Length: 70
Picture 1 (cartoon, rainbow, N blue to C red):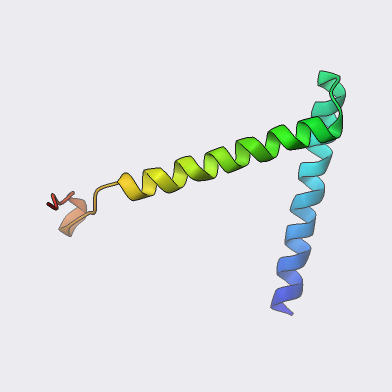
Picture 2 (cartoon, rainbow, N blue to C red):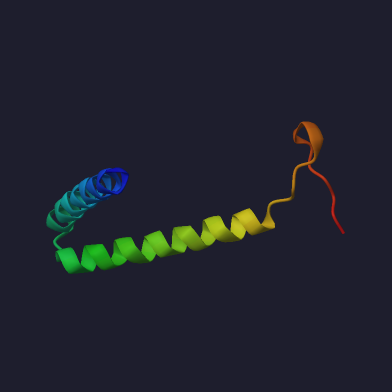
């Protein structure tokens, strides 16, 4: 049952994103494919930024203090 709920939630999110991309395509005069490709590129770029930020972030010690590791 839990897997079905996750699938349902993911499908709902995909429908929402698709509708928003269709609206953007209509407003911009681009095709859905062009807008979706740009969206995916931006999503991948954001994921890389988040990953690199997490790797570059210093570790926290006690009480939320940043520790210096050499």
